Each structure stands twice: as structure tokens, then as C-alpha cells.
Amino acid sequence: QVQLVESGGGSVQAGGSLRLSCTASGYTYSIMGWFRQAPGKEREGVADIDRDGSTKYADSVKGRFTISKDNAKNTLYLQMNSLKPDDTAIYYCAADTSPWFRLGHLRAANFGYWGQGTQVTVSS
Image (tube, rainbow, N blue to C red; front, side, top):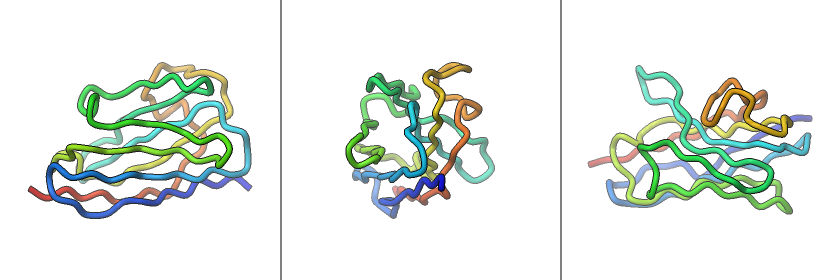
């Protein structure tokens, strides 16, 4: 059974930190990523990582967020530091068995499997 379960969201003041986790089951995923969607806005790619651990970040989070994975635990992480109110959104974990990003980095269409999302709220 394919399942991606996010955790770690919450409310924090600007400048604070949160770490999101995504536990994956069902397949061995080659590519994984984090996306977010704020109210009234389109879903956007935050960061992704391939099977070799190479990463890509959106310019808006570069230097503040870190994506990583623990293959032994089948878990994906997103460490978020220096959070800003603009980071407020529902964050989604995504994964796929494809060995590469067919449509380029940070594209939602690369991923066939999605978690249910976790809310992150950053207050000023």
C-alpha cells in the first residue's frame, strides 16, 4: 500500500525553526520532494532530492531550508530555519519511482504519490 505521511508542522514565530518529516511506504522511491500551497496561491516546489542525494531548492528557501532523507527509515525531512510569514502554507511530501526528474526540478508533475499535507504557520 502506497502511503506518505507527513508530520512536524505547527505554528512558530518569524525567525523560528521547524522540521517536517515524511514517512514513506509501499515502494522504493527514487525521487522525493516537498511542495507547499498557500491560500489563494498555486502549489510550488520547495525542494527535491534524487536517489543519490542530490538536492535542488527554490530560490525563496535557499540557505534557510534543508532537504534530506534517511533511506534506512524510509523517511524524508525538511529542516526549515529562519522562517518567514511568507512560508505559511500547507506542506506536502511527494515521491515517485521514476529514476529522474523527467520534467525538471521542483515540478509537481514528476511525482505520482503525495501525502495529505501538514500546516505550517509563521507569525510575525
